[in-house]
Image 1 (cartoon, rainbow, N blue to C red):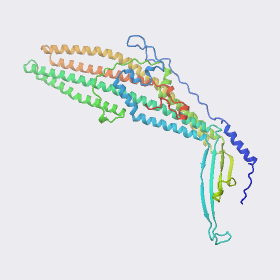
Image 2 (tube, rainbow, N blue to C red):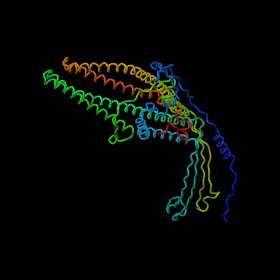
Image 3 (tube, one colour):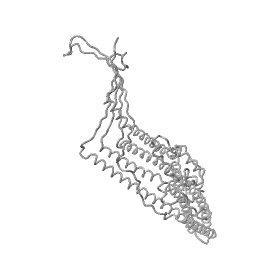
Image 4 (cartoon, one colour):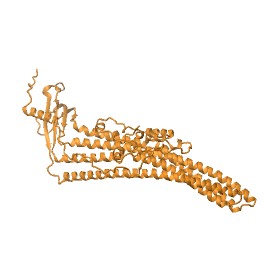
Length: 509
């Protein structure tokens, strides 16, 4: 009967390695590299172009806080346009640019999980069986002419682990977590941009409907003028030149209808694209522009730092660049790793998984770069410069946000005044046209005065419609500049992007 060697306890050196492994596992690694502190930015106390906001009933509007429910989420509902509400819902479900941005966020979040995997040990199992035979005539082997064969049953398990002593892994995780937050903010920014584009295209399309309707009314008026001119021409009261002028007016108005319909078709196709539908199967029936511009509280400038997703993305980019400095700084410190390997190996299958067939090895290793020609120093300097670049980009993003908000606040204020002035212009042009037509019918004036009055009235009415569309689209741009109701609290936190949970901001719908 075969006797096996008696098992003896591990040596003190093996025990010491095991104790070292356990001790390192409980060590909380120190983190090298600079601590991240959000840079300060100068913010004005108020918006210069805002002025006192006045509600429709004439009372002063109380500025809303960043958490004002009227501007969060479905901000377009402030226009009270059911058709626009439906289109925005379709955009949120089917817009492919938003879908792409969402998948970019999911990929960035997966990279965080990849980085976190470095905290855990790596285990490799590689069982193998080998049967080998020697050569009949190999030199140096006794009993030449005899083949020796052997079996090798091997079941090795290798485990390696690198404790995060200097925070290299932790900084890498923070770098990718910040990158995922940047991606989430980019997703929110893309969603807001597409929603705002849809609202603007919708109001532009309704403006084209108004212009087309005005053009049709003008064509009908020109037809009546032509008929009257022809009658007066046949009776000798008016000249052939007046008839030719009336015919020219009619043909010009009919030709301009083509351009108006082309512009409307292009806006309709753009809306189809935003809602994720083929332009060939999408249509919106003609409707006048009846929406009134809402009163939009601007709040105070400092709230923009919390309300705009592009500012949040720029801020998280700074934190990401700061974490990358820590990753590269850790390269100045030694890399410590612990390896454990073991398993069972035997030439006999029946003895493969027996205690005497075991083998193992355990021990730490340390790696330290002694000289690299200044590579690490230059790399850290590179990432420090890149960090300062992200600081400048952040401050530029904030300044751009202030500029855009002031621009659209000014547009709202000035367009409101201009619209009131244009109403008076249209009323005066209408009176002039009515008087000119009456005088022409009685033979007091020539058709030239009617032509001038008609041209002026048409131009003033077109300007009125254009100003109304500009007022609506600039109100959308103002809401977009104010963040569209988005808030930095909707940005997924470090824990969210690390554990895989989703925040409201990161969802597609």
